Image 1 (cartoon, rainbow, N blue to C red):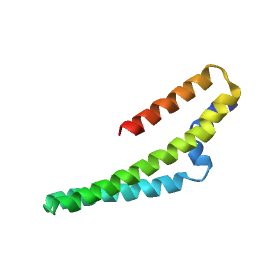
Image 2: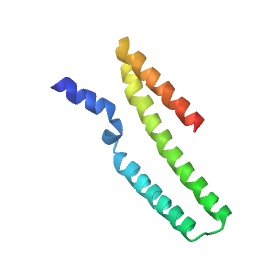
Image 3: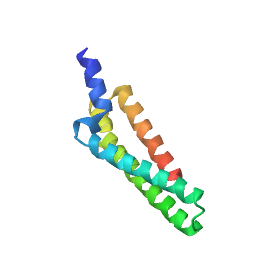
Image 4: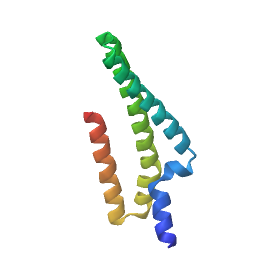
Length: 105
């Protein structure tokens, strides 16, 4: 039971670093930006203004993604590397794949 709880804590370190509320606040703001974009398209606002808002929303999402990646690297990956073995290899591969996805987006 303790191992299962430790694994959960390990996987979701942002909750324990008191950043969950910050992530949720930022995601709600992004959700509002998406609704604003829908409204702008419905109202047929100027294309450049819409693109400017798309850029702002994209930057906000990237900021959340980088924060989560940093949390993952500094907690999950570091902890797994300390323990070594197959878990370390899995966590490093996951991080590498996540970075590749972010770079491609």
